[in-house]
Image (cartoon, rainbow, N blue to C red; front, side, top):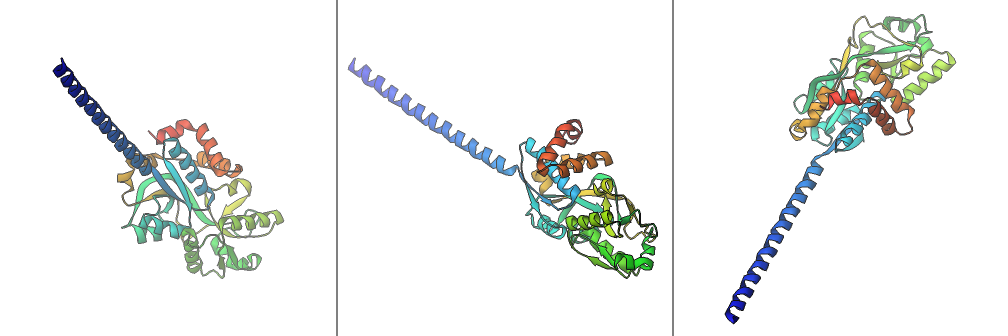
Length: 299
């Protein structure tokens, strides 16, 4: 009997050791799984470069809303265009959602085509860029008219961010047409403020602008004819990503390629974002009201 008890105790002890070992393995697997989950979560962090242009603020916030609904952690880094391209090259940001081709950002394509991925896919196909004046400036309808009326503009073209592709094209336009004008650098918001003040006062002003942009729905502006086609014809808006992004985020890469917007959609999005106290709130409202469209992108 004593012998049986000893054997029983031995077997019981071995069972306890086995159970504890199994529990230890289970805990080990659980920790491993947790670490794997944490790694997966860190892999879902995406940094998008944001430029302080109306349509760029709108689409970057829109994608922040869409991607965060899909479980991604999205950070928006506010940069100018030149720094954006450098950050893509170095891998400090993952994506830039606004590359204008074939003309406006051709210089960046030429410089970074071997170190940054420029997508062939476009999300807007009817973009236009050029110099604009208020429609009441009846005597100026072409870039070729500017020198004859330089006094009313004080020989100044009111520009925006230095380094922007459109600003560089405008400098080229000044050379092409031998314009006796100086291109002023500032920011988009400062440029728009000057346009607003000029229109309210009924005064002339000339500035480089682009469509889509909410400013055309607020003020009666006209594009000047560009006989030499320095600004190009219809521009298309692409996106760009750092090298390796498509391999790291194949799902998001596909969504970006599926992304398409028309005049009404981008105009409404910009309006929602501009009208909201927080751009993210305006973008979230637009996404909520356009789930069917967004669903086509994020299949």
